[in-house]
Each structure stands twice: as structure tokens, then as C-alpha cells.
Amino acid sequence: MYKRIYEPLHERLIPNKVLAIFGPRRVGKTTLLKTYLNSTSLRYKLDSGDNIRTQQTLGSQDFGQILPYVEGYDLLAIDEAQNIPGIGMALKIIIDQVPGIRVIVTGSSSFELAGQIGEPLTGRKNTLTLYPIALSELVLEINRFELREKLPEFLIFGSYPEVLQQNTRISKIEVLSEIANSYLLKDILAFDRIKNSRVLLDLLKLLAFQAGSEVSISELAVQLSVDVKTVKRYLDLFEKAFVVYRLNGFSRNLRKEVTNKSKYYFFDNGIRNAIIAQFNDLNDRNDIGPLWENFMMTERLKYRAYLPLHANTYFWRTYDQQEIDLVEEHSGRLFGYEFKWSPSKTGKPPSMWKDTYKNSDYRIVNRDNFEDFVILN
Figure (cartoon, rainbow, N blue to C red):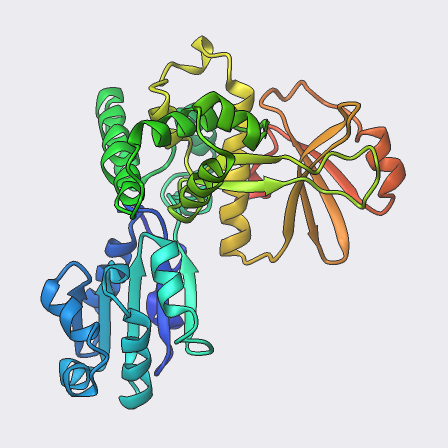
């Protein structure tokens, strides 16, 4: 079992505020919650949003049902809380009416839980996002030499907790396939009007093959024989279900800068490879560049979230093919990063970037110098 970056959880709990923990399925939200509950001296109640009786009670918005439900407890913990209709209002009633109570909720579908608790709990909640295991968490278990040795495994199999615990290649593939097909896709297909699982899977495959490349929504629509609105809707669901995330183009409105397309990256390399059933070793692949870029992008996302580092993020490209993989805007400056698997690939910043953004920084991140870029001290 891996120690997570948010432990000890009690430091983040505030009386009469809700602590909401979001994240993909199977990344360890329930384990994080139960680890805390096993150590607390508070009298707690642990429940699940899958419990029909709980759905009825908390979904009632009836003070006469909700307040007796938590009577006598110091802490209420609800796993998969997004499955409870009107959960936001129920939590508001609890934290407003029960002095000193602490509340933790987890949710694997950010679009459901965040949407339900957003307005009712304005000013009454703190949110955390838990991702697959970060390199910053792995270095608590193994040293940095071993971490570098395992880089090819991370690029192929990702870093879901269950996957990291497997000892064989076959078992890693089986676990990844189960997560991708039985959990992530199941969440998306559960939504109303999502009937065509073939289109969903085909779209995910197209995104997997284009990871790190600019994506044209109109071209995706043509390839899938669906309309643009459908593609946009599915992409939005993929983002909210923690399957992929979007990166937009950066521009200061220069005519030569490309901003009308986006890039999509997967939250986990293993899920990306499971979707296209591609688990070959790095020596037998022609996509090492995209794998490294996706891996660095996601590890940097975790780094920013866990530090935390608040930054606007983009990619940058011009019509004459000058480009930078990642641009971070923070502290009043621009920081450009280019990702290269091979340490032998060096270079200067693109001339237009250097001339246009004179106060900016530029760095190439490769497998020899990545550590301080994605690992917290």
C-alpha cells in the first residue's frame, strides 16, 4: 500500500465544512478514506452513495430524516456520494445544523458530485483531487535510482495502485483492461442519452493515437460519422470522468500562432495503452515520443496539484511549425517546456518564442533531468 500525498487526512478536515475528494475510479480514494478512519478517535459514520436507504434519506431534503441520520456522530463519511440525488443540499443541512461535525465525501464522477455540491456548499467545502500514484509518492517507497530504472514500465503500464502491485506483465494488462473497460467506460455509459458505446470507444482510440497532437473536432466528427456537437459532448464527458484532459493553444493574438485546436492527454499512460491494446516494450514501439510527452504532462499536472502551483497551462505552436509542448503561466512569467525521451536531443528555444516572449523561460525535459520537474522535494 502506498502512502498518499494527502495523508494525514485529519489535517485537512475542518469542523462544519465538507472535504470533497474527487478522482478517477480505482486510484485509492476509498483506501485513503478508510486509512484515515482506522486511525481517528472521532466517532464516525461510514456510508456509501450506493446504499438505496441512504439515497432516500439524504435525498429527501427533510430535516426530520437527515438530522437523526447523523445524530451522535462527530464525523460523517460517504463514499461515492455522487449517487445520492440532491446530496449538496443534504450536506448543507448537516453542516449548518450540527455544530462541530466534520464531513468527508468521495466521488469518481466530478461532473455529478461537483455539480451537486457546488452551489449549495459555496464557502462550505474544500476539494482535493486524487490521481493515479504520482512519482512524488513513489519516491517514498523506492529510491530515485530504482525510479529511473522503472521509467519504461510507467510509460507502458501507468501508475494505478493495483497495477503497481502486480508482479507480472500479464496481470498488469489484465488489471488495466478491467479498469478501462469495466470502470471508466461504465461511468460514462451510465449517463442518459449515451447509447452508442462503439462511438465512445472509437473516439477514445482516436484520441489515444493522437495523444500529444493537435485535435480537430470537425475531423473527428467526420471519422466517426457523427455531428460535431456529439463529439464535443463526449469529449466533455471524458474530461469530467477523469479519462483525458484538454490543453489549449497559447497566444498573445499574433497572426502566426495556432490557437483553434486543442490537445488531449490521458490521465494515465496505462489506460491510454489499454484502449488501443498496445503493451509492447519500448524497443518495439514507434510512439515513445508521445508516451513520454503524455507521461511528463500528467506527472507535471499532479505536481502542480499537490504542491500546489497555480498556473495557466497551454501548448504553443506557429503555422510554420515552431512549437513548445507545455507553457505554464505563473508568477507573472511564461515557462516553456519541451519533452524529449532521448537525453541526446538538445536545442534552443524556437526563435519566434524567444523574440516574442523575451522574459520567458525555456527547458527541455528528458529522462535524465526530469526529476525536479515532476517530483516534490
